[in-house]
Image (tube, rainbow, N blue to C red; front, side):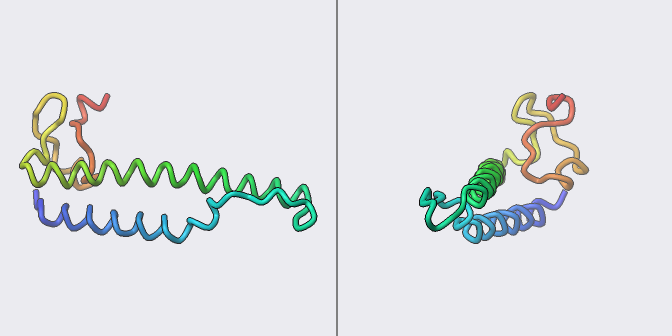
Length: 108
């Protein structure tokens, strides 16, 4: 297992998520309630879009937390070992998702 390659994958994904978060900040902004500027249906549509953007941001934040934890495991030499049973995580699983913290057996 090429830990340096997986680390670079994690860092690249982290940067992508942070960039997406910055770009979508405007869609998560509070929706104005001024009916003179926006009709009721337009405001409802804006609220729905805001809600979807907030849900997407929560998923991004959760993935960023997983990535940060994986990068910490690399620094402490715990990377590639299950956080629950301490067995080695299969390379195929690590290549599929370098941020994974459990083996397939413990994930079930």
